[in-house]
Length: 89
Image 1 (cartoon, rainbow, N blue to C red):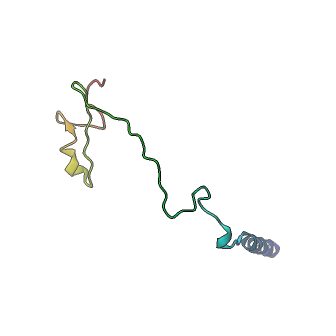
Image 2: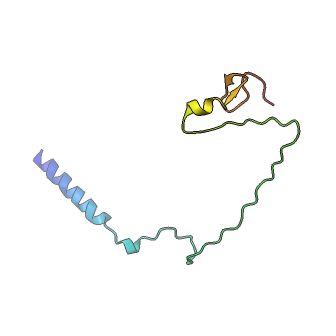
């Protein structure tokens, strides 16, 4: 048993010595340019227009479920991200 503990300690010590690396040798974010200011191209957003006849699902979120429960009811029934008790589409 003492031999097992001795070899385990030696193994852990060797792994710790091998794993040590200078911080200067590590490079994170290798694909970034050497500039303090990085300019990203603007994203093209898909234009979404609400039209007459569209069905919308609106839910209100907040810190307290009790406070938002009043706003998230449809016909007196609580909703879960969709239209309560009926058809969708």
